[in-house]
Image (tube, rainbow, N blue to C red; front, side, top):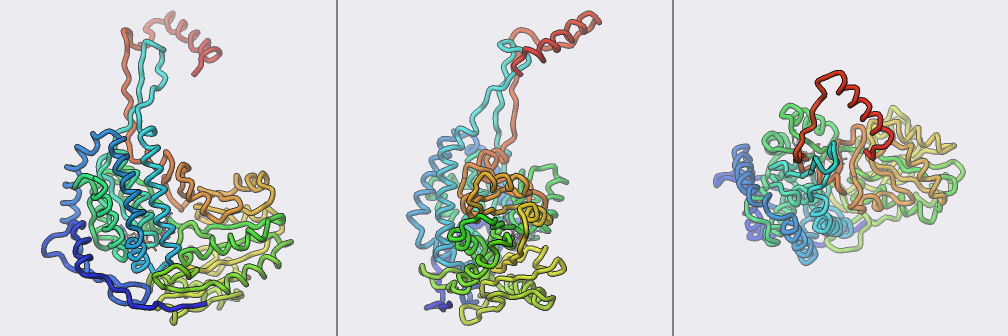
Length: 519
Ligand code: NAD
């Protein structure tokens, strides 16, 4: 079940220094040391940005914005297409960095390469069409001509999390860039190297200097400075921090998109195909050691299939190979650090102390890595347990039996979150009917979360406390623009009547239009 890392991670200090060139820091910058969750060893020494450096980055981005925003969208698209190719060509180094910084498996790191490529290609192909001016209906055809254009907002500030350092950065930065904006991004301190390599690849793809600025440092100070000085803010992280970010954006009257937490529910209906649902549930709960905002933390089983599902599910989960090698092979990696291990342990121990049954797992795996934790299945979870309502963000799922579809819907919606859900049934129409009743931004039918997340043409984001705004799809591009209406009167201007008779005439026209008018 377990394997250990063959060699301690080693990073060439020259390469680290080369990547650090892409960060905006002053010559006398303080140093932050990062550690790999694979073995807890020192990984890299990186310079730290200050709030003054953030101000320099924003000024530089504003200068870069001027010419970038005037380029045709198709020219910006060409940069993204080249970035797509460079990500694929340089995947080995990217995979190593992602694994060293996060402790995830090679397979889960490769999912980030796939995601970055899908996002870049989608945006390169579709964004120019989405951004083009559109004719809108005026009051009087021919005599009025109304066009809606989309202007970039200016400098977009991004605070990115640590769990998917390539995917999350790309999901926010690329649509902002293709819409004509400049970007100032602060990656999580623990995953700065991956972001710096993204900046390097974008520069090699032809992104003009200054259009993307990377600053390094902690959340409240450096991330806070980014969010306090940019024209639109993108935040991915917990709902608690997201609320603070929203308040800051509201005070400055700038737009915000917030991708926050989840307590996602899966339903296995009475007629589900268990040959697909069991492996699907394993994937949905334990990908990236459960540190995925859209992973499933609650499984509701129809009582008629519950025992069979559980027997097969627990057997598979117990057989998962947890490992941290920089090679393909392991099924699940380690947690990302001590804070995550503490949280996961606290949730499981709280549940155990209050009477939950641990069907498998429920313990750290120090032989695998300092923060590794066994994939864990809990039953008999009651509402007073922390893991019942709070997001664990780790390899822990609770299972519960229900007597009907309606009982699942009630339970699934009984949470402050609304990010994603998953429904398994051989009757797709019935599953879709249930999906309409679930309060979640994405509902996956007969899949855990991949089918929804890889649909780059469809919006992705959270309802309720899981967020505001959407990434992916047209909405994910247009959030970084301000609509501008350019309305032209040809010859006559719409005027209001100044006599009772003219008002009666206008009223008659309005009545006729409501019967015969097209809009
Ligand atoms: P967190 O809110 O503590 O931190 C997230 C990021 O924000 C970190 O990089 C941190 O440095 C930074 N940060 C913290 N305080 C800040 C502040 N005041 N101003 C600016 N930046 C600040 O969350 P976490 O526990 O590190 O991350 C896990 C959470 O992120 C989970 O809730 C997970 O569901 C969520 N998440 C959501 C999505 C999504 O797309 N919906 C994706 C990934 C993670």
